[in-house]
Length: 517
Image (cartoon, rainbow, N blue to C red; front, side):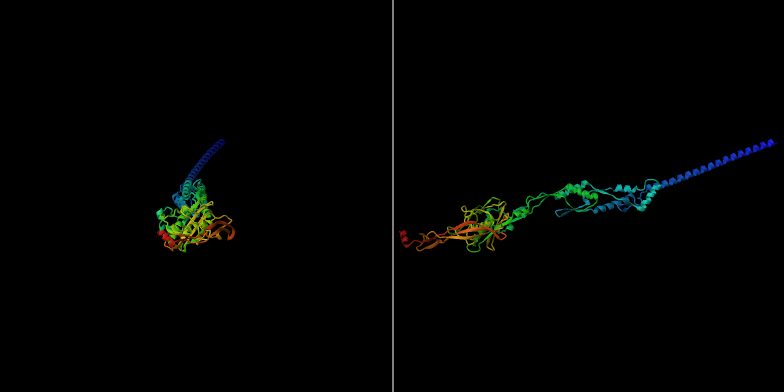
């Protein structure tokens, strides 16, 4: 019985154990199921969250707008689309170019340079792309952190521009074409019309015109101009440097200056008044209209003469033969101690005045001869006579520069003037004054000479050549410096002839009877 009880108890225990195991297995299965469900739910939840986060991240990445806080060239483009931002930046860049203004200076002249003169290229698209893709990479957290930082602190971007080198070179070449120039020498020009026919030169109108021009009206001086060559490489480099640094300032145009070989200053230095002289024809018989005409004609022919270094001036060659056919008028001339009308009478006053001017100019006298008798319009020993084809007045340019001779007649003051221009005197003197003194007298040789003119009536008597004494004169040139005498030199000794005189008489009564037989 006990055995049965024991076995029954073991069976019961076994059943209980089996039940317990079964229940334990059930509980384990249930736990696994629950865990599986929880895991499944977690997986689902995670997947959902990841999907949501990825959607959010993609929204940031694919946004058509710039992130809030993005600035380009100081312009807030946050919230703008790419095209909207580009328009705003392009407008600002255009305004920036409008501020470019440079003055290029040369010889005091300004040449403006603006952005319109070059082709500029901005890196706008590159900067826009960089700014646009800001905060579009990395995880959602990284993106959001970057967006938060940008929003809070902002992010600056700057566009840059460059000037196209070819456009700058083309601009500089065009400017150089306008500014480059060769050196031009200063030029002295006579304003006298020398292309005039001999017939025209005979007219009173031409004679008056040619002899009335004063030196200031007879020539012009054209200023020299230095040559300019723009240094194109240097200017191109300077302009490109400005564009690169964005620092613009006015500047002198680099250029090579080629000095003119002949400058106005050089001409003026060798174009000074060396000497001047004048004589008057106000008193009779010097003021006779035909004589004044001859003086004006001669002055007009000499006016504007230019003598090169070493050249000799011939008064006769310049005036030509004095004939009526050549347009000269009859006027008194001294012939053998008396005056008589000749074609060109009065031109000796012109040669005399020129002689005085030449002496005051310190020039070399080649040939000069005084008159046979003294003249009242000039001091003794300072006259110079001329006669067509026979007696000339010649002088030489003994300086190293050209000489310019000007002659004019001032009818209001009744004077003929000469002025000679050329290089200045040396440093030892600055003025030459003329003087003369009577050395001695010359007595007539013998008594008055009487010449019988059988065609005259008895008792006829007329002095043909007046009896007069002659004289000898010595002329001098005194050199001065600042008003103080430096030296005094003799010029020439002139002898004015003495004339015994000639008287024309009619025949005596006895001589007439003899002739009638």
